[in-house]
Amino acid sequence: MTISHLSLTTPSDAELALAAREAELERREAELRQAEDGRSDRHVAFALASSVQAELEARLHDVERRERELEQARSAFEAQRARLTAVQAEYEARRDALAARAREVEAKRARLRDEQARLMSLSLELDRRIREAEEPKQAEKRRAPLPLAEREWWPKQLGTPLEAA
Image 1 (tube, one colour):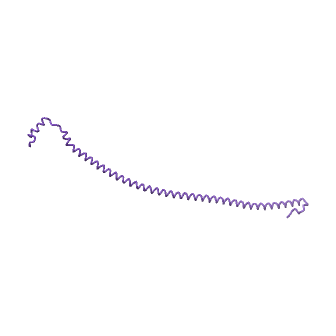
Image 2 (image 1 turned 90 degrees about the horizontal axis):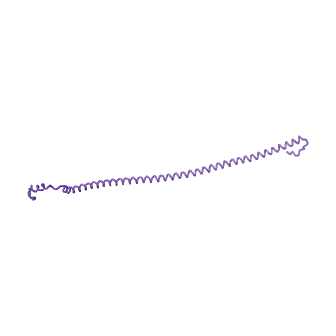
């Protein structure tokens, strides 16, 4: 409806024409707003979907990073477990070797103690024999010379020294 073709003869007609024109403009503005709102709703929905998509991608990235970290931690844990097993085996082998060496040393110490005891007994036996061998000489040396009167008495008892009794 075109309002410009109407004749504006009376002020009330002019008012009516203005009111109709204003209503038409408001209707058009409302249609434009609805179109813009539809577009803005689509933009909002798109922006919301984009932000949700970005958030999901960020979360997915975080999850993937965490999975990589966990995989690295797991492999490090497995490597550490393998090293621990190797160290444990080495420790056991060393402990067994040390125990065997301790037994060898103890056996050698026992042999040395026995040998030392044998040598000590031989040394004591040798000392005893040396003392026994030296005792007769000491007995002769210890003997004091007989007094003169006694020295004369013995030969008279038997007669001549070579004479048998």
